[in-house]
Amino acid sequence: MLSKRTPESPIPGRYRAAKASAFTLQSRRVPRERTRDRAPKDKERDSSGSGSGSIGSKTRPVEQRRRFDKPPDVTIPPTSPIVMLRVGPEKRLFAAHEAILRTSPFFAAHCTAQTPNPNAPRPRLAQQSPSKRIDLPDEQAEVLSCVLEYLYKGDYYPRLRHNSRTQTWELEDADAGVGAGTSGELGQATATVFHHRARGVILRDTAIYCAAEKYNLPHLQRIALRKQGLHTGIQCSTILASARFAYANTPDTESKLRAHYLALIVRSRGTFMRSGTMQAEMERGGKLFFDLFVALCNHMDDYTGQSVDSSAVTTHC
Image 1 (cartoon, rainbow, N blue to C red):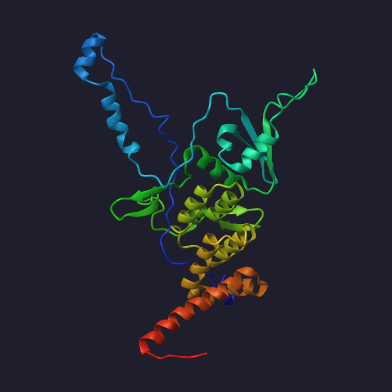
Image 2 (tube, rainbow, N blue to C red):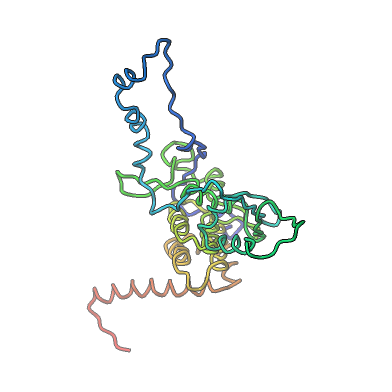
């Protein structure tokens, strides 16, 4: 919030949000035309030509849809067992195929640890659980749902779409009219999530990025980072809480997400300077604000260097 108990100004810009679509390519069926008098199969093929041609023409736009980088392999073996995931302090249950989870080295290690040794002696009355189980008490259920959606589909809602006209990336349904160009409660609900570890609302893409760091999914990290750059109209308090969460859940060697927040604060320094939340967060301190000080110094050095070059003044230290 701003000082003097005034409403906090959001970062200006548009907000994109829309309703998710449950339509998938696998559930798509091509209706067959029913007629009273059906010709033999030979004549039907001769008259209609290649049957795959008509289906291919309908699915071609889906097949030619440009994707962001390379999605994971989502081929599910018919014998893949089910793994139960117990998530968060509420211990919500999720189910996923082991073959899909093994795309992540984190989940692969947990599945391997629970795989019995075929050469080990087994007691006659051994009672084994019907499926493997992985406990994730520190994870948020909404975040893990997006991770599982990515493992199965290669992306999570709202999905990335490439605009061939402007050669830019955007979120799906950005131009559908629902939530387009808005920065109110609908946009906030789409871009943010309450995380129990942050004890507040943070950007959902930041939480997904940190989860992808934990599960060793670099492709998901790139998607989350790009999506986060497309969200605008976020409150300063949410940005600062998300930045703290990013610093607390990424190693010191991580530079992309941290640099994203530093650059965002520097660019919008006028808004953050008037923010009472910014003052309170700076009084709390932390590595975030030392990095921010360095980023501001580098920004001023670049600005001063340009001025010195333009005036042709040489200084010696």
